[in-house]
Length: 252
Image 1: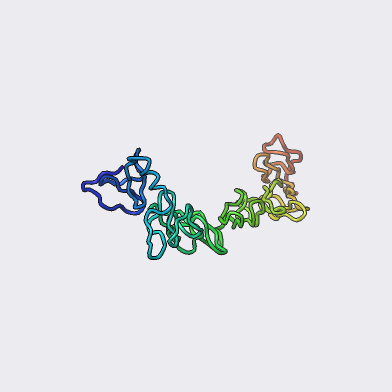
Image 2: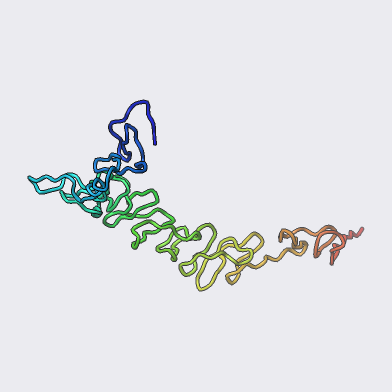
């Protein structure tokens, strides 16, 4: 319940008038009458009257002017449910949804779209769903792709992969080739670009041999120069040499 400094005589759309105050729902022992006001229940006859389909009839046109509780006026008749494209309004009227809504939550917020449009994540009707989602023809909504998909046609068929994943038969899989920076898929995973000091070989990555006076660093996998005076070595330091560089002898 909301109290204001003045007594309310008419409420905005979506609120109910009761004893000069505006509410979101009627209090106990009251019922919402066809005019949008909370009416105190005084007798069973009063309840029965309010629940009649038509409370006020226009005899000249043989149409209903005011429908009872649980009914909504549509083209002069009282229905328990408004047809598609209409909103069941609190004052017992069927209010047309704004185009392009097929059905709506309010008169201008769609819950379902008409034609070949789909409801996106902001309740807008769109022809094409945003990236990372697809148009679900069963629900009429934009539905998110699988987390590994950057784009998809259906819930289980990716058309583009997220991050560094690789497309393989409409699925996204990680690049599992050792020392590979860029993968692809043909009939199997293949590497297109290898890490530094590696080269592409038969779809995988092969270590590029170091020079004679270098060794492979076991931590970084990079080529390092042997410690002098080593010519060939298996690791850093003088204790790892296998061949020494011979000194140059000059004749006099």
